[in-house]
Length: 131
Image (cartoon, rainbow, N blue to C red; front, side, top):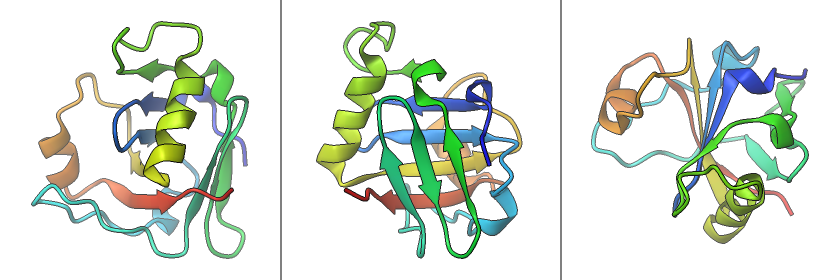
């Protein structure tokens, strides 16, 4: 299943984040309970972060592909506007050993991590990167 890059937001950081909106895997992901700010491991799921495609793979037939090169990236020293921002996000994911993947009904207008992590509507968690 391919997810429209307009329904994604890649966020750079020491632990990078991939936000998904209206994802077909939303119901298959575990509910996120991270009110203390620590994001749990998303058991049975993994991520393959690549410059052109990002694969989120789950148990059974669950999973999706994001055309990453066309997806928005925020964060980093340049605010994520440099042409190599997706490559930098992939490097962040490699250094962190994976990424946090959060599935939401819609992408937030502002990134309020405490609200996202304690909303009760987000699903997902930390997914280890496959090499």
